[in-house]
Structures are given as C-alpha cells and as structure tokens.
Length: 78
Image (cartoon, rainbow, N blue to C red; front, side):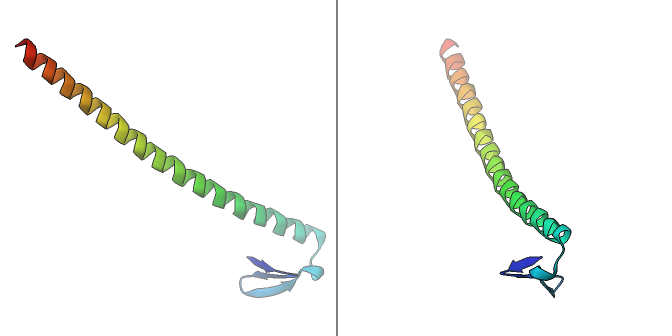
C-alpha cells in the first residue's frame, strides 16, 4: 500500500482518498502506523543485536584476560 496526496495505491490499483469511507480511511491510518512501528522495531532489533554481539565480544575478552592473568600467577608460584 502506498499513499500519495489524495490517492492510495493498493495492489497497483488507484483509489481516491475522497471516495473512501471513514472506516477505510481508518484502516489506512492503522496500516500506515503499523508500517512505521514495524520499521522502528526493525531498527531497534538491529541495535540490540549489535549490542549483544559487542557485549559478547567484551565478555570473551574479559574472560580471556582473567585466564591469562591466572596462568601467569600460577606460573610464578610454581
């Protein structure tokens, strides 16, 4: 569904907004808001996935550093 000025296109068919019922206009409003919300959720999901990857990388580095420090300490006491 696309909307330009007072014309709505659904499945490549043109509908004049003035010819639509209040109910049909309401459905278009709902669809428009759903499309915007889906887009915003996609962006949020992308950010969350990137953050998860970054924090996993930080955790692995931290664990690796702890293991390195422990090995160093163990080698000194031997």
